[in-house]
Every structure is written in C-alpha cells, then in structure tokens.
Image (cartoon, rainbow, N blue to C red; front, side):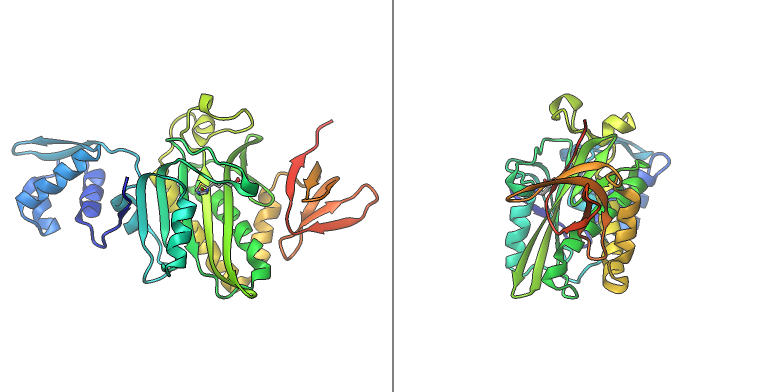
Length: 329
Ligand code: BTN
C-alpha cells in the first residue's frame, strides 16, 4: 500500500477533532461555517472518513454524530498533534510496509528533516536488535523517528537509546496509566515480560552522527495467543484495548521533551530515570558479548550510560553494549 503523508492543515484533522469533542449532533451548517468550506466539500470529507472506517450518522435537521472512530494512525489523527522538531519534519503513514526503519533510513539519507516520523499498522519484515525479527502483527505500534543530534558525538550515541527508553516509559504512563519497567539497554518490560523494544541505528561520518533512526515497537493490542510466551501486551495488563494513536502522540511528545533535556542538561536526568525504572538492579544477571559471557550482579549505569556489573570478586566492570539475561537458580 502506498504511504500517505500528512498534508499541512488537512481539514479532516479539525473535522475529526470537532466530531470527537462534540457532546451530541453537530449541525452541518455550523460545521461547514467553522471549517470554512461548502456543505458539498464537507460531505466529501465525511464520505472520505466513512471510507476509512469512521461511522458518522447523518440526521436531517440535527446534523452529524460520530458513533465510532477506528484506532488507526492516519495522518490527520497524528500529524497535527506532533511537537515540532524541525520545520521540515514529515509524517509518513502506511497500512503495511516491510519495516518503518528501512523507510526512515531511506528518508534520512535523502535529507528528511529532524522529527520525520514513519508509522505503519503492520510490518512484514520488522527488525529487532542483534539481527532478530520483530513480530509486527496488527494491533501493535510500530514507528521510526528521525533525529539529527548535532550536539552529540558518536561516542555518546547509546545515550540516545537510553533517552528513548525513558520517553517510552513516561509516554506509556501518561497515555494509559500503565507503569512499565526498563531492561538495559533497549527493552520495555511489564509484569516480568517484554512488552516493547527500541532499535537505534545511527548513520555516522567520522565521529559525528548524521542521523539516528529510532525504531520503536510496542505490543499494544496484539491478542495474547499470538505473542511468544516470554512477551506480553499493554492490553493484557490494562484489561482492555489501549488507543495506539494516543500512545504514539504521547510517546513522541515525551521523546521531544527528553531529547531537549539531553541537549541542555546532559545525560544525568536520563541516568536517574533509568535508576528508577530498570528492574535489574541488585539481581543476578548474565551479559552476553560477542566472544564471552560474564555473570554477576546488576549494579547500575554510569554517567556515560554504560552497564555496571559487580563480579563475584567485588569488582565493578562496565559495558557499553551487550545482551542481558536474568539468571534464576
Ligand atoms: C528489539 O527489542 O529488538 C527492538 C525492536 C524494535 C522494533 C521496531 S518496530 C518499528 C521499527 N521498525 C523495525 O523494523 N523495527 C523497529
């Protein structure tokens, strides 16, 4: 399916918001006046929305009533609510794609503005860390965001990943009230199971970051039976489906806020957020590295964002990358 891009000032955005906020029927005359369009143009937009799954009742002399809105990441549901990273940011949406990450990287290479966001309802080749695949069925949230952190040297790129983890935790809490936890360096957990992951891929030149493709996947409303045993979904913990469009808006807002914290105050507030939300501290873990596996107690993260492992000999070792697993006896 071809991607749809957000049109600035798409009247459907205002129309949908008005219908959603209305306490009852909205008069057609009033609506067309407020939107500055003819009754015929209004009817065309309403028909387009119905085609996209919105159920809008029309009753002569009473007007229009929104009975149902699909929880889709349509441009008019997302783009007008995004914070401004740059004047040239864009929003690209598609029903399905191979990977939002691939699309975003191509856009990044072509010079897309910071804050450009790619989202899809499903991915056929969702990618995870360490070459794994990412299950991307309908009901999950899959998106990639372009950052151009000119204030950060390449050596500090991993701090961006940790910043994204904080932003996701806060965004999920604001949107749903659910408190997730983090597992260094890129996992989001809920009730001891993985609920989401972050894939950060940087395009670099010498020691500077040209752009970072921040890919985030969240199991939001995926039916439990479709998830692997070691994974869970927000809906399972919440007891009902969560709005994915609300989640996306809040997570992006939090990324915007935490990104500017990183820019102005440095890494310390992010380190503190990790101290608070990572469930590993004080537990027995294994860290798997390309050529070795080390075991010890998860001690914390240092001021660069590196993982600190306390060995059984009482030494503190620090790791900039690796895969952590909990050790249970
Ligand atoms: C992980 O835990 O391994 C990271 C998973 C990241 C998945 C997201 S979904 C959106 C974006 N597109 C991809 O292909 N991958 C990331």
